[in-house]
Image (tube, rainbow, N blue to C red; front, side, top):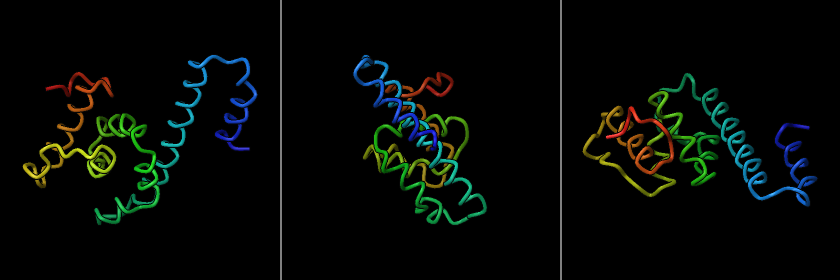
Length: 131
């Protein structure tokens, strides 16, 4: 039985006696674990891909987008660590475009704006990126 299924089973067993905060914590841990699985699969499958369109059309990248708002802080944490193809996912999930047309081609400037946005919204703790 994989870890996610085992945790879900444990949650069901604990439901009658657990408080809401514990359940929310376990649920969040499951979401983080799922994100990490998708992220690692996406990176493995696109490690040698140079076509940006193929990178963002990858099935696991799309699954990260499908996670919705819960993925935003996780994406921002990865984005703070390294520049990657995250602006498309963030735009898709949030519906926000942060000066990306102004910075066309300047991926680092786009990255910096997204991270500063995440810090401002208290989604991540990266004060070195705040404006």
